[in-house]
Length: 559
Ligand SMILES: [Zn+2]
Image (cartoon, rainbow, N blue to C red; front, side):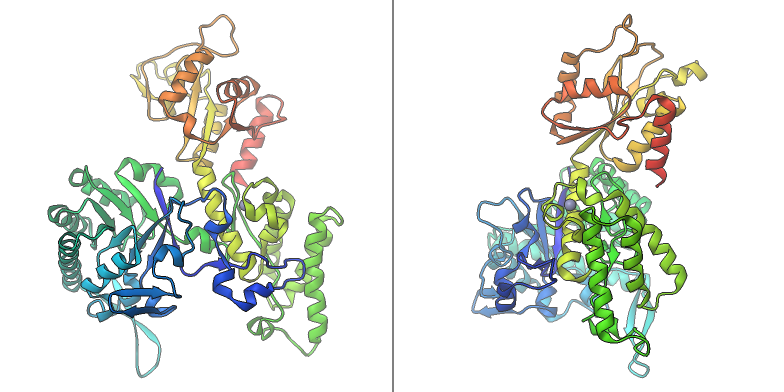
């Protein structure tokens, strides 16, 4: 599995927040930093491997104090103490410069001089330190002093070449400093580029300098295909090098990235999706996205500005807000039905002067969230503690916890193996002359294909087929030729449980924490026998016959 670094921007929550009465705790109000918690203080099993701290935070948000060679942040002299990472924790901390914060400058500002940055990483006890880079980009936005508006300014290839040169020069100096001073953090060199060739060039230079950990910068803007092309191009030169992808989370391609040599990535996107305007605010542990339900805070002046006060008093608005929250709690407790809850929420929502189409659209999304109650199926501490509150779009304490949940769900999905059944109809029945074929292309019956569509959609990085003859098969593994063996045919020579156990070990299937079975009862029972200790999920539970299973799969895939 790829190492995942969660970027931090002081993302903490009040552990004693009162969700029933919507109130911060006294301890939060008294001393916010010391009493609030990071995600890793809340999870027993932390769903990320490290934290990425951008040093730009010291320019923008909190002060870094320097006394001779000693640095402190919020009176802490180590980055791990500041992040409240426990001594016994394996959580690692990576530091970078947050080059986007100075993308419009000619060069990295004086704060980012290479000696100082290396010394900050060392003195604060970072595990990894990223060299000082300058982004190569297509354009930048510059404020016009006359109009005050930000205007687009194209960046030429020549200017980008200059930026790449600065980045490489800094990387060389950075590595020398680390070696000369015997710094204990692991140096990472940044490769910038604006084409496959320029990335390739940067990577080669960094390898020549002696870097064994290289981060690709500025790739957020690119399509997944283009990123894969870059990775393929540098693959030969980076056989013994770890690769980090900056700011890129393409959930469906994690395995592909890993196959191409990527070892780590960072991204805040699933965390921030929790409160972005879209239907994708909450990721369920079975891979589906849900919309969270907005109940805006009437004490927020920005929200209240939108309300038409000619018709309503502030007290009336507050009353409607309270009723909306109560309706959601009552629905969760089974006291009222879904329509009553929805109508109460939408009545308050309407005050915010949405256009009516938007409202209808939201209502459909909200209904799905309420109907399917995804929080009930999640074992994360956020969902366990908050219940329906996790799905309410309202204030930092709910929204950030939903973000933390999303990070958990991502890891949970990565830790789940999806096993799909094989099928009777195979490619050789239709095209007898076909040679050896990858298992993913062998079974051509429409039901088997539908099972695979489900696996590809929800578990794209971790699915396999179970064949009555060959046992567990990854989709890329080849089957030599046609065969006719079925678990349901007692006369045929099927693979047995002992053999499947050996395969599960060899193919590292035991490393997964959960198994999802897409197939009939026979398959379910076999999987339960092979993985007696694991949680086995059966989304087709209760279906009778292939027709019902097809229907269920269609609903799950298309919903
Ligand atoms: Zn959860």
